Length: 570
Image 1 (cartoon, one colour):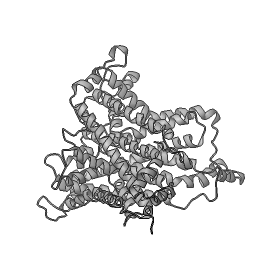
Image 2 (image 1 turned 135 degrees about the vertical axis):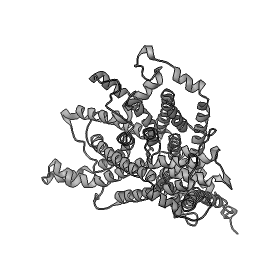
Image 3 (image 1 turned 60 degrees about the vertical axis):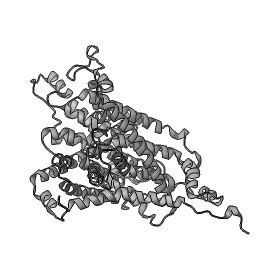
Image 4 (image 1 turned 180 degrees about the vertical axis):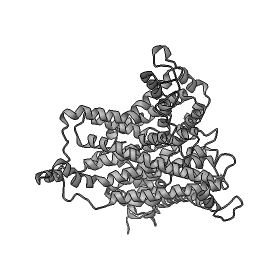
């Protein structure tokens, strides 16, 4: 006679898991399918290639493509030129305050690029920019003379490069720190000098990381909306993302916008594939067992000049922009010097009490951030669990679907979601639901990557033990796996929450007057020229972001310490 404890009850959790996997398919495939359909149809619903023909022949569409390519190449090259020496100094030398320099790089990484663009408006606008005011005072220049003009193609490329160089820095610093000291020592023992060792040993090992990071910077520059919208449109020129956005203005040209979005999607897929190949190439690898960490190069008398160089590099993405935002937030008029007599709470009072959109936008942002981060974390945990434990048919496709949105630029996803959810049966436009769908879709790759990496290091023995004692798969996930991964889960939630707060590319197409979020309100206020109120909102956004990062990086006290798992860091 069988022991009742050993009789398996129907496991309905597998049905729930299957529904979540199906929902993931809908999230990713539906907007991209509608995007493709609209690109090859006209207003009457007939099939046509006229949209692509216009895309290839209309000068008003070709010029933004060329400008976008120039900006992307220039900003990626600039990001690499800045990140390479900075990463080498931080990873391989004894430059002072290396931790502080890394913190500044992190600050530039989490700073919303559109907020950085507004800060550089304050710094380098031809007439009112702080740097141009200083230049007139220092060099005796005329009232309308200037040294810097951020409203140019060069200015846009510079500003984008300030907030894309962390991608190159992160990959390169990790590569430099993973080079064992043994192989460089062996080169020196065999007579290789410092330059020869760097050329024959170090450079081949880090070159894939440099190229991969530069490609990511190129991709970010290619797909950004906020920075060119703030700096390019006032000068009368478009990039591809701003042109796509303009096609939704009255009268909307949705079919042409869908066609214009597809080349951006194609280039993104190509660049991501090239980056994956570079990071996975095996032309140069370290062969052997456990190796010693790289030894830091002693700079001796050059330590403080090297630190000064690091601070000089960090002036552009962090120090000067943050100082400009702070000044604009606390002085009565932008042209006023920073002095006791000019300090004022006017802008803070306006944002908190006079501007009607602040509370609604802040409430919407917090609600969307909390809901989207919770949904992404839960779905990523379930999808990662299904994929790693191979619990449903077609589990091999789940990581592909979860990571697919990483290849979709925000503006392209915004177009696809607009096309899907502005018509029956899913009319979500004008509600917060369409923004939740957008944020969940766009942030799913970040959440899935975090959870999947943690699940790989978690053995199934405890889960199987709970199954032997009668627990369902859902109970095993909730009672065993999730508690063991709670530090990763909290870090994932925080990363997604921050991503929601700084997103603008898709949001700009999907919000209405009742569903605006802080990023869109900042963009709208910038069009009205209210830079003081923008600075207050931007600083509040940064304070919330840094508070979350600080909390997450103190999470080891919450985490499961067994098995040697370290803390996640942002």
